[in-house]
Amino acid sequence: MEKSQIWLTFGTLSLLAASAMAADVIVLIEENFHKEVGQDKGALVEFYAPWCGHCKKLAPKYEKLGESLKKAKYVLIGKVDCDEHKSVCSKYGVQGYPTIQWFPKGSLEPKKYEGPRTAEALIEFVNREGGTFVFIAF
Image (cartoon, rainbow, N blue to C red; front, side):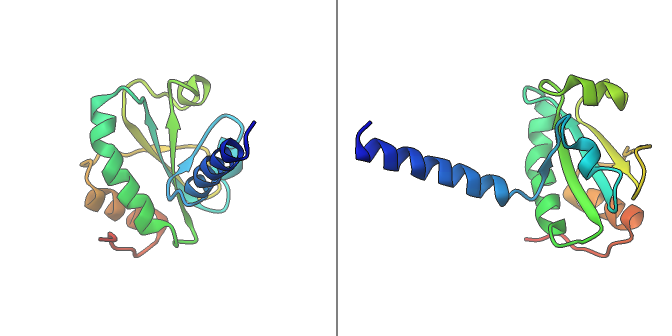
């Protein structure tokens, strides 16, 4: 491989790693779900499918929620791709997309979120359930 190809590959991998580390919404999979959820933080989890129109519409609002709550010590904002991780979605009774569930601190028994799918409504719900007092970041 030429030096330029090596540097291009290294640069691309570095950018991918940096963007993954900077994520405000935690990507949950079979291997990390129980390490992240049900621990010392309350967790709001979106169960979604990449092809789902409602999920695509929710995505920027959910990212805004994650950005607003990234410094909250007692709340985790996560998401599970149900096409890739069917067993996690099945375990939590997901039948439609997006499904949003709140997992209280120390619990794997979720409470289904049934409110409006706006960043403001979601943050109000998280503030109420998680005991936080956070505003939407603009």
